[in-house]
Image (cartoon, rainbow over all chains, first blue to last red; front, side, top):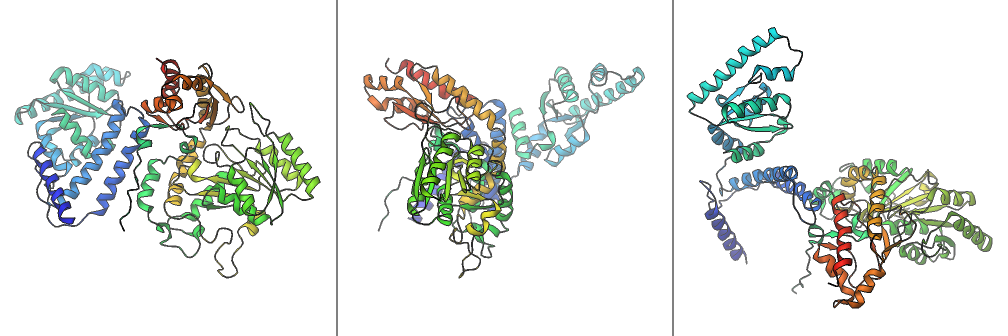
Length: 227
Length: 379
């Protein structure tokens, strides 16, 4: 019976490996230790995702908003399962951060705050690829953010905008990249930055309600979708 | 010996909307399903037990019982194996064989069994009959007073807060006061209410309340709740002379493992949903209204309904059954096609149902399905 089970498992792994995309291939498992903490967390991530099975009865259709939460839970679980598979040599130990590091090489990120830059770096984005635009990309947008802004202050804003735009052009040239990704919070500053960047650079815009709550697997999904 | 295939798989709740009132209040939230993973083993809550289940600090069963006591406003509370075991313990502690207790005419059968097992006679308070089947405070008072006159002493009174046949909500505070004035200790069976709607045992003038974890408190069964005022603690929670830590009526320890862990994990969720009970009742009324738009579908019991459990008389569907090739099975099968379950196979003359805890869209979907079946089943 045990031999049969091992054979079945081997077949399944081979089948899964042959069906995998890109460079991700699955290998024969080697001896290892089960990370019980990861197992428990993966299981509980799936339990959290399970709630959507009940709330979406009987059709099991999810709105885009619901799908976002549901898939986040699945991604959380996947990351942990992949960690365990890596412990047995079935997969390469590539964390979400490693994957983000690779995929983010293809983008220049523009964000609105230094804090967001730190978050992106922490999740694996190469710091050289991030520009913090503390100002919108057009001076007139500043009036929407702060209607009482004096004209004198707008002059210095104009200078800052020039710096930011120069920075963007320089990085596009240096890194030989055309893909601009605006990642900011879904507030007025983020929306204005996103709109202008879309108009000027054809940027893709990702606005999150709580960027600080974004997790590496979710960023990876965003980058994979944007890729 | 090779064991049979027990068919131990169940996807009903994952694939269908279940209208069985029995099932609606026991569906586990994610926190409880996580607790089930951690505490599924038999004695999982007993790792740090020093002899008393209710005093275990890890997991914090003692803290949970404190919260639970506040939640239902009692002085002492214990978990038991179910509401029925709670009722049995009360009858057993207060009555002797041959004693008499008063029970309402809509009482659950387990009330009768608790009395029978204890050799206690019952005097029943009749309900008002069709179509409301109500237990009124006036009738309760009259029956209780007559019973006292006739028997001399009534040891205990029991009131079903919400009955499982009609979903009628009794006036517990008023009836509790009647019993209190008559000097008769009273127990409120809250199997269909505790965990669904607010329970304030003291405001309801109750000496005891019992609840059901698996029926209305989002817990894995079997587990129940027995709450009491301080006056009864000594009697109900009397310790064994031989095993000093063990409470006799509880037979030492009651539900362990998954039942209590899920009950504990669900308490915050249950408290939250209880605070929204008025909305749930309103939605139940809307559902009844939509159902009654079908000619030949009428809610029985007190109207407008005060609970999610509703009973319908459905001559409309019974009439269809007479002509339908699948006869009485048509309703079950038509509902099943629409991924709705919980109405018994073959039942068309009447049924009980509940849409408790469903989303507004799901409730509309269910009502819409009944309309569609009524209109098209014979096409």
